[in-house]
Length: 133
Image (cartoon, rainbow, N blue to C red; front, side, top):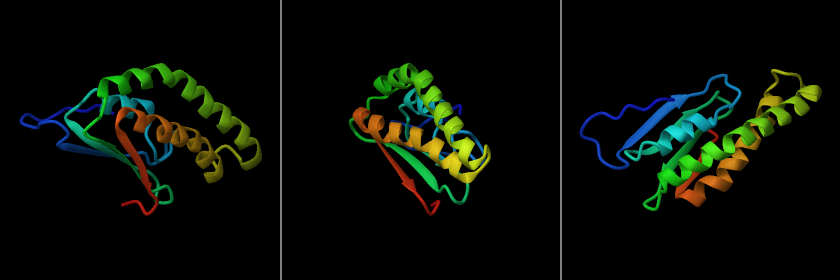
């Protein structure tokens, strides 16, 4: 996801919404999405809309948001996160099939758990609205 900030917007005034209809990251954010947020302090929140059954994920900056720190952390952790996602996907697809909803959900759970742990450490909230609002 690339973000181009329109002129005249100040800190945390923008909300970016995009979708992940059928990606390996599921309805949640890819590391590139989080890096885009972290590299643009004018963006206060990002919404990722997944498939109907996956809902909407939201990351919001708090007043203590450490954009630079988050950007560095995501860049450092991304290779490991990708390996963990692939390992989980490969282990689950044996049981449920490559393209099954269950395989996708369990693999995305790896990323979801990571964001729940890491984002608050850098002053961001992370939530999922299962109804897709």
